Image (cartoon, rainbow, N blue to C red; front, side):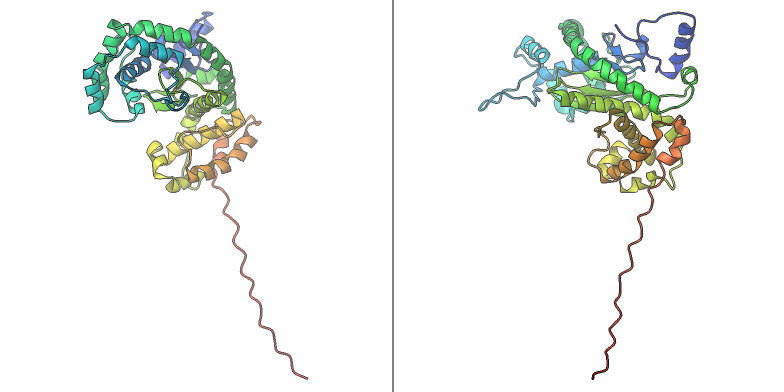
Length: 373
């Protein structure tokens, strides 16, 4: 059963709180605030479930020949060892290939994450309305997704996938809920009732989408208008599950700090280091404020999870590693205090102290020649 989230979008908070104060008990998050009717929620509104648009997309990609997989059988064949859900779907699809679909894919080369971003522009199942979609790729894929889901048995495959994912949802819900609650507690944005009744609090939502139709260990993060989606392939082991949790808590941390970071001064802070950020990191984080949200969101995740959580936007960037090292002890000092995050922010983002000057080289005085005997 889905659990009520008080971390709703701003226009939904007030109505939800009024219902609760009036003694009403709501069984699930509002339909407009969730990606899938089969999702479960943490108490702070992070969604975990199978998403129909993503599921339909990967069903079509598999039909067209997408066979990316990290788990392989023995040599010499090295056959891909797909998840049970993916194996069943591929067996049911048979050997026929939709040439029109392949033509659309051939005309739109790109990484699979660009396809995920496109289908998330569509409306919800079963209509998958593309009127509001801006991407030509989204409009091109929509007819195939509608036909597969409504006329070719896709909705039945979706129901089977939802049932198959139940155990994974249950395993993920408790640790995710614990970590998200800890993050909410750490980033103190104000009185709880104030966060419910106005636009304070988290800026945006986070959803973990379980996608058994992709490779084991796959992890893709995309940003929609108001939601960060973490799309996770089937887990090979506990490390894959930990990476997914890292991504979720990092994304949630960014939503918590966003409002205050957006108001913060940059000059004279650690954010002055943005100039040294790598080009690839700047593509993901196009300005110093975005970098600041990422740095603090990552610092929140690492403090909450008590490990070097993998923060996807910052991996491999030297300037980010240096900035995170400066912020980490400050976040640790802030954690046990009752201070609001807004009051602590100047200290968290303070410029690192200048390195001590190098000692002046020692110049030895020439020895005076003594008088000979």
